[in-house]
Length: 263
Image: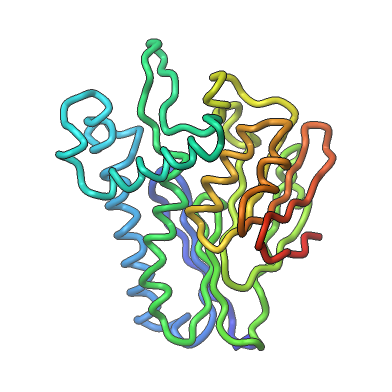
């Protein structure tokens, strides 16, 4: 399989680029293309429900009080439950609620939805026989490799101080990688306990079995600021890479986690 070329596909949804690398049996055929189309259909449906930019989305209507949680699709309750668990686990640093421009609290589950949506959308790709994939949702990645002779995907970690530079590389067979930071969107991430951007940290990358978990924990760890590495070290099954504001780095391996070489 390693001699088969990698096929790349890219589309744009949920306000970000979605890209897919396929290699193996269905990389170049209609079966692979149909799985990609199904993946994108799932992400478009997620956007209809969870977009915070579209006034007609379910989440925006829920936030305005036009509908109740009972009126929403069941996945809304699932995402809010994940957000509530992350808020408890992070001591309140992570939250799906944020201060709005008018001073009221606004529902914004974006910190949960991206990884959760990609994990959900990857089901058609997992069904492809004899085919590896690497699905990227705005730079957070979900990967699968099949067979011991298959080379791992090599995931570059961007330097938050110079986004043109890769500061480290994670070789990953099957699993997920997510990074939280402010290199591209400015200080949009805050510690929910204070409402202010955390201090001392530039980016946090988390490797986990699930992109839902990796994405949530990368954001929650980043919100911890100077405590990011210590908090992440207590998260079972996670490994991480923290870039500090001064440019130094720390690698983290949580309990029961498979240590990934970062170099």
